[in-house]
Each structure stands twice: as structure tokens, then as C-alpha cells.
Length: 546
Image (cartoon, rainbow, N blue to C red; front, side):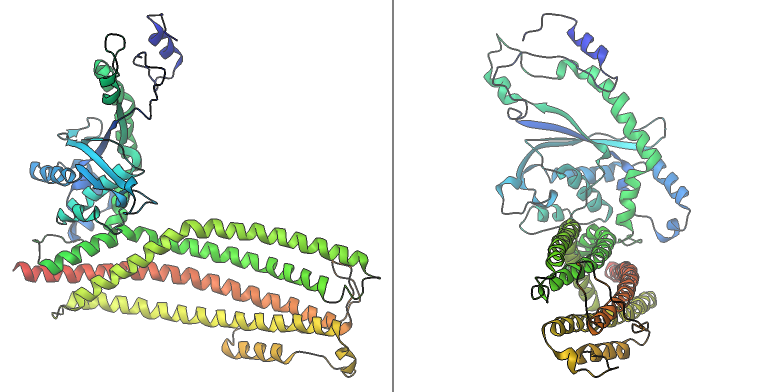
């Protein structure tokens, strides 16, 4: 439809909120598809310059957080440092494999090969309201993948802040996985799509090209009022970029006033860079592990209920079919119900395990990087007091952690023994219902499987703090939830099994407490190992630079 009303733009905008504007329109071919015919896109990224400032030294870090925040607001980037940032961003221009700048794609896919036409970094500007300095980065590329620009900006920030050689950018385009964190989404803006291919093909005598230049002044004014100012205000109120840097800085050295070192130290630098990019996954990984374990513990009674329901259906009810037809019907319904409950719980476990798989892979990589950088620095013969003090702290955490791990393993072993005893009791009940063994047990005696007895005895010896369980004292001649009746001996064994459930619950709670403690110790150990290696690297670099 061709609109004849010359005031149509004003009329549309009248009904739109102020944050949404229509600038103009052109008539296109009927086959026009805005997404498919877009041959390139222009993005912008607003970045506060304090993200590029050198890391604080020890003395500065002694200041209060608010004082440090004021220093960041007052930071003004030098021309030399801005030129360095521009050099880093220039490395992304051209056609490269950007597999390390997205997710769920590897270096073997053609999909990850992208072409960036240009990257321009504007001169810094100081925002009047809060006096913070910002730079605007213009990125023009054929197309961008999920998280690509945010990871590019992050890589540039980390490279500059850590004074890593620019060659690290080129390495990210090579085969292999390098983990790169995402910079905040706050500063990212799709500025405009480009239709140069479409414009070149149309008959300009009949149709207008799709261009945005004639609306540039109005669009820039709108962008400043409703987008830029919102970004500036959000950073001041919520410190989005500041939080992003905090995660990184906790795992990077504090004193970085050094010259570039020899090739071995460059390798150390790159490993430490990689460690800093991965360290953020530790806390959520351990939290998810704990959540998964809790769900598995919640699932345990459902497993038992399902197992018992099948046992009740198959361990004697068929022989008693004539007089227990209703019991069989109830038992069959119970099997179905417990199986449905079990499937729901297993689904919840899978929902947590699947997203945690990537964190598990990243964590193995993180551990390997830490081992590699530790080995490289172990080859240094010089020993220093400050380094020894940190190593002693590492050793103390490792000793405490090992005690937790050993205790956890003992509790797990105790739980396995209780489960063995439980299964032995269940098998004994089945055996009693299908045989005449019960008649051979003397009056006043109790039939108790030897395996169950020995397993409980071993559990008690392995973990003396295991709570005691009182044996059943009276027999109740009543039907269970399927309508089936059991002899006094069979009922006794069922009641013992119920009491073993309290021991399993005790073990489960103990395991969760130990896992929580172990998680905190592992995070603390990782941070302390990083600090230790940072200090060793600093001392080595001091020697090399002398």
C-alpha cells in the first residue's frame, strides 16, 4: 500500500511512546525482506574509559571502595593508551574465525567465519552530569554472532589492562578453545542495518534507496536523549562495568608495573589471562553441584518407593492372587504413581545437569591452566619471603580441604554400607514370602540377614558418630498401602528398613554440609593459588627487568 498522507509520520509518532520513533519510509519491491537483504550491520558500543585504566597497586587498594569509585570516575585516558586500545581493536578487522567469540560453535564450522569491514574508536567525551569519561566504538561488519561484539570488547579490555602482547588476539582466531568473558550488554547498540546490495539493484528512477543519512541529525538527538543518557545513568547507579572488572581483578595480579618479559613469562601471562577469564565459573559450578546433589537426595525416597512398590507387586501378591486381587490392583497403581513421580524428579536433575556441563568443561580447563602456570613458576630457583608466606597459606587451605574430602568419602562409604544392609533386608523379606524359612526360626528369635548385620557393623566402626537406631518393639497386624499383610518377622524387617531411612537422611545432610564446606574451600584455594602465582610472577619479572 502506497501512503498518500504527507503527515503520516507525525500521526504514527503521535500514538507511539517517546522512546519509539518512526523517521521515514520508502516503497520497496514486493519481494523485499528486511533481514535477508541486509548485507551488513553497524553497531556501536559505549565504554567508560576507566575500564582501560591500569590495575590498582597495593596502596591504592587499601582505600575504601567509594574512594576507588571516585578515582574511576575522574580517570582520563591518555592519548598513548587510547592509541593502544585502537591498535587492539584493529586486530579484529578483516575475515577471521570468531569461534571463541560466541557459544555452541567450534573452529571447524564455516558459520564462525565472519568479516568485519571497519572499527572506529571516537575521541573520549566527558559526560556533564557525572563527569565520567566515555568512548564510542563503531563496528561495521557483514554479520555478527551471539555475544561476538561483547566478547571482542572484553578481550580488548583485558588485553590492555594486563598488558598482554597483541598477538593474543590473533591466537583467538586459531583452532582451539580460549574462554573469553562477555563485556556488559549495557553499552551495545545496533545503530543501523545497511542495504547497499539492494540499493545497487533497484531502479532509482522508480524507487528510493534505503538510506538513513537524511535522518542523521534527528536520530543522533534521539539517541543522545533516550539511549546514551540512559546508559550513562545506569552505570552511575548500578556500576555495571565496575562489577564486570571486579570479577576479573580478583584473579589478576595487583602490582603490574613491569616490562615485557621473556618468552616463558609471556606464556605465563597468557595462562594467567586465561585463568582470569575462567575463574568466574567456579562459584556457580559448585553451587549447581550442590543443588544437583540435593535433588538426587530428594529423588532417593522416590527410587525406594518405586522399588518397594514393584517388590510388593512381585514378591508374593501373585501367589495370593485369589484373596488379594484388590491388593494387586493397588500395588499396580502404586508402581505407576511412584514411577511418574520418579520421572518428574529425574527431569529436574537433568535440567540442572545439562547447563552445568559447560561449566564442568571450563572448570577442567581452569584447573589445567592453574597446574601449567604453577609448574612453569616452580622452575624458578629463587625463593622469596612473601612468596613463601602465600605458599604456606595455600598449604593450610589444601590441608583443611583434604580433611573435608576424607570426611566426605567416609560418610559416602557409610551410606553405601547402609544401602547394602537395606537391600539385604529387602531381599530377606522377598525370600521369607516365597519360602518356608520363617517356620524354622525358633520362638523368640529374630531372622536378620548376615550381610545386613555386617554392613551396619562396618558402618559403625568406620564412622563412630553415626546415630544409633532402636529396633522395633511391637508388631502391628495391619495392611500396608497396597492392602497386603505381612508376618511378624516380615513386618519386623520392614520396620528396620524404615529406621535405616533415618540413617540415610543423616548421611545425606552430612554430605550436603561437607559439600558446601568443600565448595567454599575450593574457591578459596583457587583464589589463593592465583595470588601465590601472581606474586611469584611479579618477583621473577622484577629480576628480569633489572
